Image 1 (cartoon, rainbow, N blue to C red):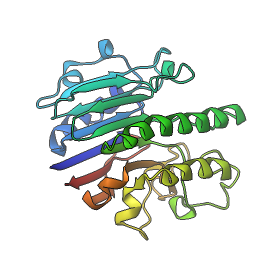
Image 2: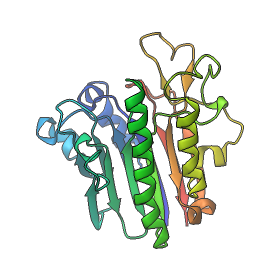
Image 3: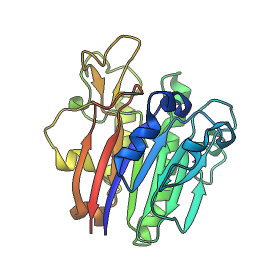
Length: 256
């Protein structure tokens, strides 16, 4: 099986549409495109976003209007689609889509941002751990698992341009990084770092400060795979040349 996947936090899918998202999606030629922070419900979207040629689309929306949300476009037809993590603490936020394709299970997740204060950092870490429980259940069954999305944490100093200045900033707090480290303890593989152990690339920039033009960024968007897929990783990359959001797309190619 060969699989081409792309993930992108679009920071509002209706805004992204105005910036060429539909044309980009058609040209991507990916088997699966996972998007996060859609900020819209399906009934608010154009036919071009709802039913792009060659893809089926599945949506998970927040109860709060204009907030959060994820969508998965796929050339493959899933055998099962689930929303949420079966946890009332998180599922009203519209952060999780789980699509089961038989040969593998894909988690498309917009993980919480801890920037609004300590209670949100705690919420974020609790979300991480609940996600690991659910993903762990699939891996314990011997299933191939692929996880993607905006994790909202840079793990290592090389994953952001100014680590010392951000040591006390949510997204690079020591306990957030330790919680992300639990992903690796559970066996999940950071595909970009697996393929490119020494390469510095970022996937998010603060647009208010013009950080993208100066490439003062953070790598907070990830593709992870379960241990059995480690040897199936063909390539993983980040694409900062693609504009339209404060994030850029990331990609993964698998063959097994």
